[in-house]
Length: 192
Image 1 (cartoon, rainbow, N blue to C red):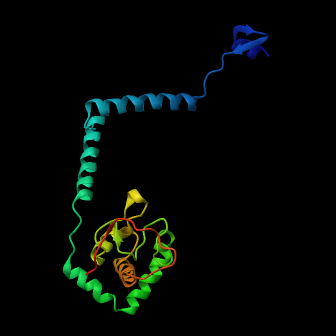
Image 2 (image 1 turned 90 degrees about the horizontal axis):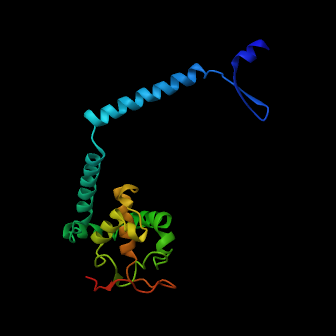
């Protein structure tokens, strides 16, 4: 009881007495360690080799600009060699059936079971939003996606042969007349 009286500070409020207990050593050690760390951090960023926030911003903006330039480069024109290779695959039933499987699992939710369009555009009519319906243009759209319309860039998620086969499947269905097609979008194109 006598030790308790020695720890009293003499403050009393509404019958509550204040004790003068020291802070735990672990708490004091943590407190002083954060002060030392903060001081070293400040020295490092003010006088050391660390980049300032403005330098970090300039670096990040340069990276963003370079990626924007790459994204805004004109689409590859129709590559006749690639187009002819893809057209040859139209007669390969194995490639078309593999493309149908990929289409059913990845594309049909947005473009419909019969390519008639749903959330995404109709893929079998004469109207195209991107390009003129050439297989090499379709493959480019599939690879890069149309992010502002919600279509992911499948080039990072599908293998190259899967992309080619799904494009060949789409090409094999050109001109078909599915039930309940989505109204035309884009420009009307004349097929080669």
